[in-house]
Length: 146
Length: 146
Length: 146
Length: 146
Figure (cartoon, rainbow over the protein chains, first blue to last red):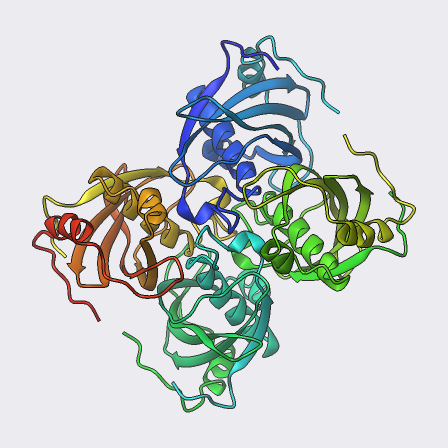
């Protein structure tokens, strides 16, 4: 996936409790890092997720994939580069690259697919104004939804 | 705190992701272990916390204290011994001891104080039938609420 | 992936702290559930991961994928069905299905690929006796490594 | 505990995965917030914890206490105010206040006591140069070690 102007960068200092006895950040934590990148990207473009939820739009993760390239360590600051790569009626896909801040070393890459649900956890369309913003964020890194 | 007949024992296998780079279970995880012990003790006595919440009784932690005595490690199974030590109109206190299963070595001890709230997070009385069960669990390990 | 005789079933009670404000188990937690399933399956066949690490064999997750089908909730007990689906010189793949215990409803499915490393986090071969055990666990659910 | 000039302020955006089904940040997460505040305060004064560990100084939490005053929610940014309140030969105490950034509402307060250990998890003295820095951070909020 090529970098585009639409990538959002979020810096996260690694927490001690995120490491495991291998001395590196536990792999499950990257799924949380993705989420931080995604919610901060959306907020930066006027889509406060807390407000969307209050308005009855839940975006639930229906798929996540992470490929790990190099370890993150306590003392590192990691950068999550988040991109919107596909928007459909009820689904949106985000792609992520996690880099070590000091060196831009790639630590992990992956994606999530989210589905729009209502408060009763039933599928619903992504509202037009939300979809418009999300679509505007798709750069040249467009990806297919599975 | 002396052991009493009313202690509830819950066994929890340590998860790899719960360790940190010191090679031991991260200290914050013991607060989760306490919670597992507490909810399983309540369930064992007919107080399913999920059902209480559906009925509008939220029990929120307003205080937690943990003293750590020895490390837990991946590969260990820990035992949480939970006791009810005080019940008041709107608050209940639980005391905990976390032991290494294989040896009964004390790993940590502590307590939590919980307050009863309604769905809007406002204080409410603990319903009589719930308080009766909780009081019946207090053995000779009674403690003062702060 | 068809069930085989070689699947290992691990039961995990959902912890309250694993839920999020959507009222369901947070999606990242399933990566931890996979890990619990994997380490318990290995231990059940004589491969105590803690002992392998002491002997200088680290198995690090280089890829994880999860597809979510239905929510898990506090009060549920989930069952992780783990299968070994591929073993190579330096990599092993596990596939997982997470079911709601009471109903066998599929909650999530996915896989992880692990790479063998030495203590310095450099690639190494999976020792013969470990590979033999892992290969013996592959049933008719064999999968390709990417 | 009165504010002093020596308090260190760290801002942490609440992560979605840190909430629980009550719609607020799970109580165990505040123990992680304390740790973030403590490690960032130390780093701000030249005590990089990762470097201390490499040099053979482990600081392990032997006691933690948290009192909860008000809920933190997804969408909040919390501020951790950290103070060093006691330094002894082998132990150091930090006190914390967690505030909601937008309003300075107190969400939680507490403390941790840490003990100095060597790589084999045996007690050791806090090295003189580290103790000197820590002592210099004690303002008028001095507290007793238990």
